[in-house]
Structure formats: structure tokens, C-alpha cells
Figure 1 (tube, rainbow, N blue to C red):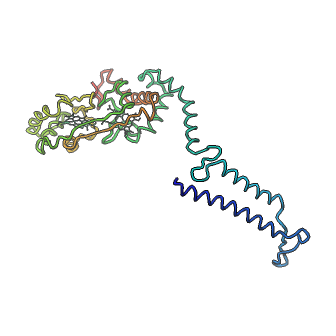
Figure 2 (tube, protein in one colour):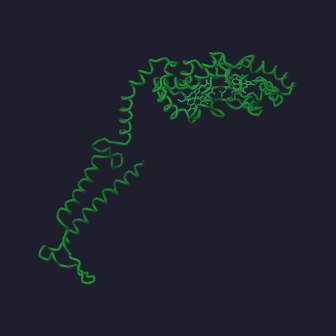
Length: 313
Ligand code: HEC
Ligand code: HEC
């Protein structure tokens, strides 16, 4: 709040209190003396008259007591400009204290969880409830409540990973964040080049594209793209280059979306959580994210094919 508003409020508060003092004294002065106590005000309705009795003393003292209370309050709590109040209370310090108390209560629990390896913790139902809450509060805005993602924000609930799906890799993705850098190649390739290499990329995931574009595009792909996405299109988790041969896309797998990715490039940013949540909470979150793909992991271990698995070999 600007100091103008601080003073505005403070001065109005004091003026009000002073006005109350004046009002009480003024009415008290006008008290009829005790002898005339049973005078009427002169008002009369149908034979009923209004007596002009003084206010009872205790009532008056109650007014004075509220005024004293108000003044003490102004001295104890922040009331003017940058005046902090004798108690040093502030909404912020109250909030800070609550946070510190909560932290003190839950820190030992998180430290305990931090000792448990991620795949094991993923099966721990209390820890996963905590993980779910952390996820809802910190991750769901981008990755969706179920971790299923949306255009621009990857699905992290399946077993397809751009930065690797090993427990340590997931932990690192969350702790330090990730920054995907795909350069825009529209200028270098020209419109025709983009058409060709997009057709080839489209065909990598087993879909039909015009044959002559695909074969012309393959050569361009090997020159321009293979360094990052690998010669076979399987991607490179070291730089977060996605696998282009599966049916899993951050930005969409339509021909148009692929062309846009190539022409303009893509720079997805996963914000680092280290300073926001700290290592112990990130450990629980990594286990929670790991748990989302556990069914698919088990199925893969058992040699079963799943709908969209296959990006993490
Ligand atoms: C310097 C490394 C690099 C080069 C060269 C490169 N890419 Fe990429 N590409 C990436 C990275 C990293 C991403 C992920 C960007 C992100 O996460 O935001 C990506 C993303 C993509 C996507 C989006 C994938 C999705 O899931 O939506 C497509 C399509 C793509 N690249 C195709 C190509 C093609 C085709 C070429 C060659 C013309 C190419 N890339 C060249 C690194 C590269
Ligand atoms: C501001 C949006 C945003 C928030 C909030 C966010 N993420 Fe992300 N996350 C992203 C983007 C974008 C990427 C993809 C980065 C890239 O392009 O490679 C990503 C990538 C990831 C990856 C790597 C996925 C892979 O395929 O390897 C993991 C794991 C992840 N996020 C987990 C989390 C968790 C857990 C949280 C909550 C603490 C979280 N994210 C919060 C945007 C976000």
C-alpha cells in the first residue's frame, strides 16, 4: 500500500476516535441535573411522554473503554505510514510464521521419503497422496491434472520421455528444469525444403505421404536433422530432441504442426523447481510422476505392446 493510503486510513481512524470523545463529552455536558431527571423532552404521542433521563454511567464508561481500546490498538498494530506497531505484527510475518511452523512439522516426513528410492516410493500410498497434492498445486496448470499434457506441454503420464524416463532423469527434469532448443529452419530450407522434410518426418511414424516428397525429404533430413533427432528419427534424450517415429507429439503430429515446428523452431521450457520446492519435495514429485507410467512400464517389462509406448529405449 502506498504511504498516502496508509496516512489516509490512519488519519481517518484517529479523527473518528477524537470525534467520539467530543460527542460523548458534549452529550454528557448536556446531561440534565439529577433533580430535573424526570423532565420530559416535551414530545408526546397519544398521552405517552418521552422522559429526558441521563444515560446510565456504566453505559458512558463502556464508550470510554472502547475509545481506550481503539487507541491501544493503534499503538500496538501498524496504523500509520511505515509505523510497525509495538508488537511488530504484520500479515506477512504472520504468514511467514505459519509457513515456518508447517515446514517444521512436515520436513521430517519429507526427509524420511527422501531416503526411499524413487521406484519404491512410487508404491507408497501416503507419499503418493502428498505427491498428488504437490502435483495439483505446482504442475497441473501446464501438464494437466492427470499429467496428460496438451499442445506445447508434454504428456508425462505415459512412458514416452524426451529427456529420459529413468528415475534420476525425471528427478533432474523437475529439479533443474529443461529447455528444449529446436532452431527454426524455415530460412535455411525454404518453403519447398520444408514441404519435403515435413513429408519425410510425417512418414517416419508410419503414415503415408507423397512418395516423391518423402524421398527428397529424407536426404534433407539426414543433412539437417539427424544430428539431433538421430538418423532413424528416434530422438536424443541428452538434448530433449523428441522421437519422431512414435505417435507422441508435444506440439502435434499433423502435417501442419510438423511444418510449423520445422519452419519456426520450438523452445519449450520446463521451469526448475529447486528453489521453489526444494530437493525433498521434488523427490516425492519425481516418484509421483514415475507412478503415473508404472502400468505401462510393467507392461513393457512383460513384453506387451502398449498403444503409445516405445519412445524411451
Ligand atoms: C539442434 C538440434 C535440432 C535440430 C538440428 C533439429 N531439431 Fe527438431 N527438435 C529439437 C528439439 C530439442 C526439439 C524439442 C523442442 C522443445 O522441446 O520445445 C525438437 C522438436 C521437433 C519437432 C516437434 C516434435 C513434437 O513432439 O511436437 C519436430 C517435428 C522436429 N523437431 C523436427 C525436426 C526436423 C524435421 C528437423 C530438420 C529439418 C529438426 N527437427 C532439426 C532439436 C533439433
Ligand atoms: C510453466 C509450465 C510448466 C510447469 C508449471 C511445469 N512444467 Fe514440466 N514441463 C513443461 C514443458 C514445456 C516441458 C517440456 C520442455 C521441453 O520442451 O523439453 C516440461 C517437461 C517436463 C518433464 C520432462 C518430460 C520428458 O518428456 O522428459 C517432466 C518430468 C516434468 N515436466 C515434470 C513437471 C513437474 C513434476 C512439475 C511440477 C513441479 C512441472 N513439470 C511443472 C512445462 C511445465
